[in-house]
Image 1 (cartoon, rainbow over the protein chains, first blue to last red):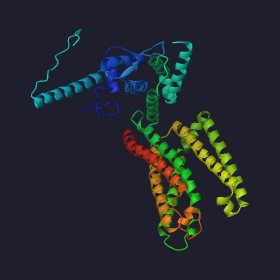
Image 2: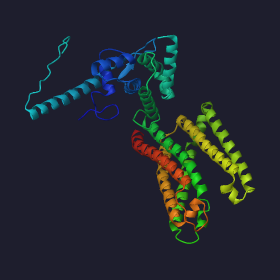
Image 3: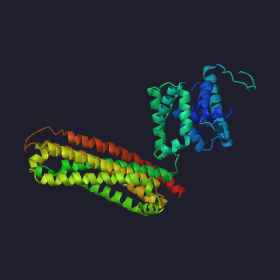
Image 4: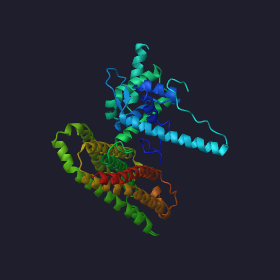
Length: 124
Length: 319
């Protein structure tokens, strides 16, 4: 069963909420830092409108929370519920990717290389 | 960045923030402005950037009003849908009144030939308009206790300014219409309908004032209703009445179009204002304008009615 997004539609890896949760899984960040991080790891440019629209929905759902700040640039961090949500979404996308790779290899008779477990600190 | 550049970036960011609803601005405004400033680094935002923020700001307004998504509870969604129907009906009233004026004494223009279709369509339109009026009045009566409670609890200052503007617009409209009525009594039929420029101008001003009065009352009604503490039973009843109004509007538009079509074949001289028995073009720009606005209002009304219907199920589950 495909996982539903915050809007109830099908989950996609480039959905702003998933990108934000993924970025925050690496540590708290404010809006501009989030945008730059997402651009770096996903190649997706999220403008202030899209970013804050997703932040609003994620905060409403309790998936992220703001941290106290004296600056206008308020940082956010992922909550335990948010981590669980992201883990489930990543698992779902992983299964979809695996299934796609399996079917491609059957159709093309060419084995698609499976990515091994990532070693902490390894660049690949 | 220079001080001048910083000031310009700050004012640009603040102007972009206006697309968002007040409550959202209070919560996210400062950090949003900070992000826009960081993003732009003193440059002017391009059209695409502005358009993107405007789009998401309007999205946030629709979400906050309960018109899309599930960010607000079902009661808020029913309320948002019903208020959309109310605003659509207010918009519908303006071409509706224009239609009433255009079709005045239409039955006297047909001396022979079939008058069944124009009569049926006109009567259907008039009956549905009456039903809508009753539905709106019933909804207002349903919410009256909540309104009294709101005023007694000290809520009046929050809505006073909007109600004041609505009263001013209504008094101005009534004064102009009364003056127009006195003036009209001293004019001939020909002067009233075609040949006297100043009277026509005053008539247009009265029509515009009427539209402004309707708009200001709609704004006041929305401001009041959004603040009322409404029970789920009252809300469900008011929502049902909104659905009735939302469904009636496209039916009235269809009836107006049928009336126009039947009059175009039976008595085109009435639509063109030419002598009886002539064969002018049945295309009347004023009627076309009326039907276009009616169609737009009907679309908005149906959107609101569908929102109410969909949210009503969730409301009944949550009760």
